[in-house]
Length: 424
Image 1 (cartoon, rainbow, N blue to C red):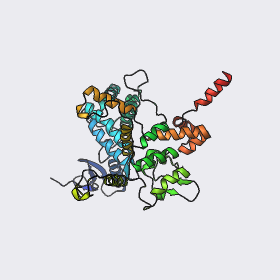
Image 2 (image 1 turned 90 degrees about the vertical axis):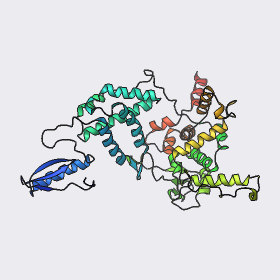
Image 3 (image 1 turned 30 degrees about the horizontal axis):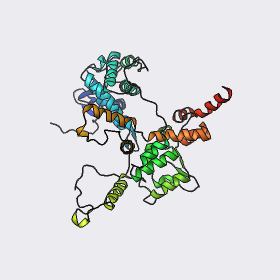
């Protein structure tokens, strides 16, 4: 069996006919008389299209455009995921968009993976959307995932893998409308009350608590807090300027500047005395402080028990890293919420002793009493809008237009109350 390689197929001479030939995906393509400029140009064109389509032959060469009628949905999914894996990257790392695409196409694969692409039409897409609803996804999530499925077929058309009529047909399927579907609707993201945040801070590790305090003051995104480094902070003025190494809208060539005032500087100053390229808020620092606190509160003398570090696993499955991500940051806040807002009767009972009904009640209680770090951004936007106006809120949050800022910054209803009281 020949050894598989990633080399480019060679330009060869077919001795029987005297023509140039190249083999792509196991098929021979004749290019014209060997050694001529025309055959070389044809070779460059075919190989370039073959590489652009992920080392696959998407169409027959020549003036008549035909498609592979045996192409199944699984093959299209594999080709598109190969493209998405290379395309959806930022600073060398995969973005969350790639994982969202994988989740969406997982259901398409299960229902229609072995079916020909030509059989995937509007009814098939509506069936997939119903599967999204059955999974428990919210209406907005179902609509986003259905657009990702459509995007895959649009990409297939752009790569000449499938006819445009397939995409044009499924593009007629509209998203789910509010009140006209069984899919649940998510609640709007509202600011979180300061009293709730203060009650949660007591149960947070010191490092994560400072992340919460800084984000509440500056209105950063959770990811921007996690990636903060000393080298990204300009401390030349009385108000510091933090330019994140990466941000949400950088692909639109927009600059993101976070302004840090005196209160934020007081929090941040404790984390700047380190290597300029190291992250300020690190899980390894938080874990070290947690272990030090446990050792300080130890009751048994060290000569009668394990010394610090003597009972560590040699190869632990998980270790504290050098940087928080937004997901780990959110989970830390949720755990603190569970400790701050205990269920009146079920929180002190072992989970293994709870009945299924009680466990469901406890889960609902915790879900209702948890808040996520992205709500701190809404809190900061609302506070700035109330004191300085919507334009100031836009600048602080880093939005390009005030319409976006209006989503994050709630209106000051006290003004409407005052107007009604006066003219009402």
